[in-house]
Length: 622
Image (cartoon, rainbow, N blue to C red):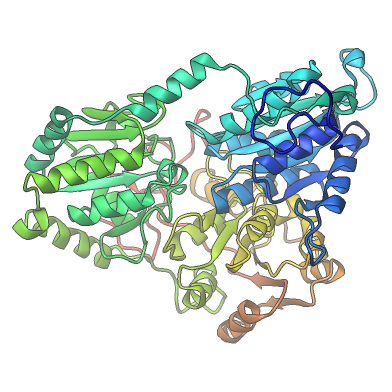
């Protein structure tokens, strides 16, 4: 692996530059150079050379205590590997890596790749492929991955020239982490993995257009005239509101956003993906807006006169009726790094494309230097009082006197212990929204969920990836009985690697979110969503997979004690909670509804009469 060839390439500073390596060894060395700490993957014939190279690398570079520098985590299936890579990336901010074989191994990662693209998560998926001479012959375990993934990923490479393998791999990491982050897929035929190469130690592929666009965004600055225009409009506003999305977290701009909001006494609401961008326990945090956002956040959007969108894209779960969204706002400002998002859904009066943190810092400094101090001038005091009244009057609430366990109470009990300092992952469904509504998030990268794609089965493997990224934090997967079924096999992965992950299954015996829509919009016709006759014993399944602590909770009186014991357990723990099957997710902005028409349920106060159940039209989205 390390033999030096004659006539080495120009000096790159890399200690292994000029060394003879197989293509597989090049793959592993580039992973090490990119700072990869862990790889998630499932082996197979077309990727065996790389798996063997990982084995040899770990044997040759083991630490003094025998630890592997590049541990390879084996899931139950490749979809789990993709979501583990995502969980690692979301919790750490670094690129997650999945390593899979050809054919079905690669196609099993299509969903996590598309999921990562939709939520702008940086992962690199390395796929084995049949030898180049066999491509297109329907060889054993062949699939046209470059074609399949092209519509799902930020970029796809099919390596057919072994001499370009190293540069391609380094370029894949560059593309995944830069600009608007996303997944990159590298399809590597087996003969490329076995090729004898000379390691260069540096170098990437030429991407003149992509890098020019990145430079334009990265070097974009706000001059005095643009700052003056922003503050001229803000100075006339009396009810400003910041609407922050996942782009703030992806850009590592949460510190700048918090400083900006505090400097100018600005209230902040976030999207589902933006939870943690600001401390949700602060007075001027309105928590989440949108389809299942807090009533007070949605009413604040209705009432604001200046909306500042930062790293947010006005998606359908937030602006379902674009023309009515923030209808009282006389001015909209939009910060982003992706030019495609500007004016795509909602027209902005002022926008900036560039580094979010630098732009917010520039504006904050300019405003303070030019005497814009609304807190000292009590400029927004009436607005703050109005928001405080909204939070009191339209607070989140539920049936606290019910004889059945309420899911909200379960989350409140866990939150009372974790206090916004734990990593929370979720599947997709009602439990996902309850977790978003009732957990506190003091910092970014503590909230992991499939936002845009809404992929059931995301929560458990994402929690596994997150625990490898953050050994210092508790990781809790809040899941549903339907969602966890999608990747239930990953329970064994938790115990195999001794991860102290806590898994909560809120069991309402069905597809709760779909059932809620059927109740509200399809006159209670519960087609294919009732799982009350299903035979799954989740506790026994967890025990079979090695969970020493696995319990079912059905008595509300036992809730506090069981939750405390569950969270405190030193090791993997599994808790199934039998909840009220009729518990709903409220507030809810239904299809075609504006925030003013929001359904708040029986226990959250609404500003207007609640609409009756409706038939959804054939074109209405779920």
